[in-house]
Amino acid sequence: MAAEMLPNAELLVYMTQDAVLADANALTELLAVFDDPDVGAACGRQLPRPGAEAIEIHARNFNYPAISQIRSLDSREQLGIKAAFLSNSLAAYRRSALMAVGGFPTNVIFGEDTITAARMLLAGYKVAYVAEARAYHSHPYTWMQELKRYFDIGVLHSREHWLLEEFGQASEEGKRFVQSELLYLWQNNVGQIPAALMRTLGKLIGYRLGRIENRLSTGVKRHLSMHPKFWAEPSPNDSTCLPR
Image (cartoon, rainbow, N blue to C red):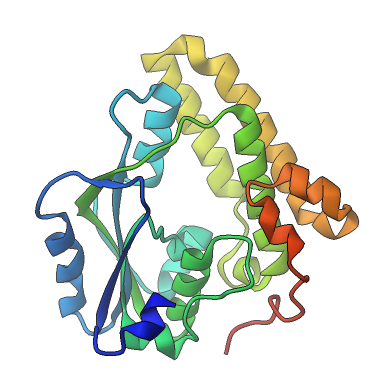
């Protein structure tokens, strides 16, 4: 709604309410990549919040490395679904590019940032990851919260199946994450390994259930989801269509 209300603003910055900029130059660094006219969207690096434990720290370090990257559609050959990774917790969009791909989708459970980034890549735009633009933003999820989050990811991939068809499956990235996490915990906090394994099992169960959400009752889906209010809405009838 805000994007549509700001027709004269070519660059739009998005942050979630619990993201805290790490320094005064974060937004300047984020917006600098738009000097390249082909960049349609960019996101910054998310750092673990102060006081975060090892599992939380590793998740942020794995998903948000210290090296910047500009991705094009060709990047999917190497990165797969990760090529379309983007987070609105700290992101910016070229408004003309955003509107050219139809704006943010309004009928998805979450992941509107990833869907928009994927549409931009398919339309020929570039998507930037700017490691110099940093914000503190992480969550101490329990294993049940992880299950619910991955249920929603499974729902997203089920309904927006074109994401996986165009960019590849997420399973290899998941295996790489688990291997990296276990090594990190072995070196830094071996006592958290049992909790990490429990969370991994929860993620797997949640994701698998999300992929078959059409077989589940609405009540069960509300119970399994981090976004229960989504299930009060009518089921979309066009969200699985490949964007043009």
